[in-house]
Amino acid sequence: MRALTVEPGRPNSIRLEEVAPPSKSDGSVLVRALALGICGTDHEIVAGDYGWPPAGARRLILGHESLGQVEDAPEGCGFARGDLVVGIVRRPDPVPCPACQVGEWDMCRNGLYTERGIKQRDGYGSEQFRVEPDFLIKLDPSLGPLGVLLEPASVVAKAWQQVERIGDRSAAWSPRVALVTGAGPVGLLAALIARQRGLELHVLDRNEDGPKPALARELGATYHTGDLGSLKPDIVVECTGAATVVLDAMGRTAPGGIVCLAGVSSGGHAIRLDIGALNRDMVLENDVVFGSVNANRRHYQDAADALAKADKTWLARLITRRVPLERWREAFERRDDDVKVVVDFAA
Ligand SMILES: [Zn+2]
Image (cartoon, rainbow, N blue to C red):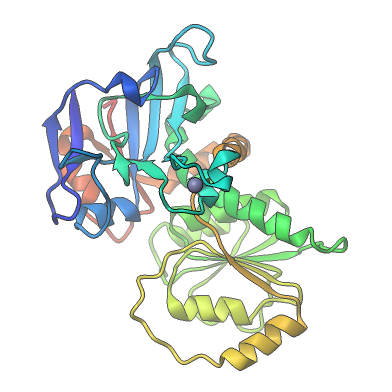
């Protein structure tokens, strides 16, 4: 079978090559790939800046945003031939830490977790792959090719679940206004969930044209490209990782505000910050700023529900390019109008 592989740490080592069929040790369910979403992490791995090969190997099969169809599954495992499925990315650490022990590998405490297509486990960027039934999510068949959005949606489903857990510290919590910063796939999916919660929605991004403004407005959001004026959101889901945006988000919430940092900064961008003023503001207003990464099984399930309820036409427009496997190189080119780019394994 063919697979997209890289040598982690070596820039632009990506290639499409013939590899051995998936090993039974990856799991008992055999899946035929339909699509693979490409995200910022994949670009970092291709650039040689991130990623680890499996033990004893030099190359890693790339890809963690999967969509496939079950080809073969053992009797009674909960999956059957033809099911539309997505594989979970992370696996618990082998110790395991207290979080991984209870299935919360997204909260892993020792960093020894592994990840399909990223960290020490081959990914889903191959014509077939195998997954353990416990790490496979069955999708509503009506989602069809849009199911490839499940993995990025799981990350924001977790972010929202954490926001709500924190909000529940007050019996009077009734958020009204949400701000999402960044209108990439993660930001727009975070915005979708905000609307499903019935919140007044604001989306901030620097893109003034391309598909992002319309996608945000069609959700009912007010789309901002510059100064947010006097906007005081109850909840911010920060998806840019840009230092100035992060700082502005932390300083502008309404009392009791919750800021979820879901974007990863590259570092090296120092800005002036009056930590005393920020501290004063946060203490006197009971504000919370927290980080959120990855997702566990429950969040994938929440994300599957959110996608099933969403407008399919809108979801389809998040996928701005579908590149057949034969032309895979194009999927790794960055273009101005991209939101989500997908490698189509079924074309
Ligand atoms: Zn752990």
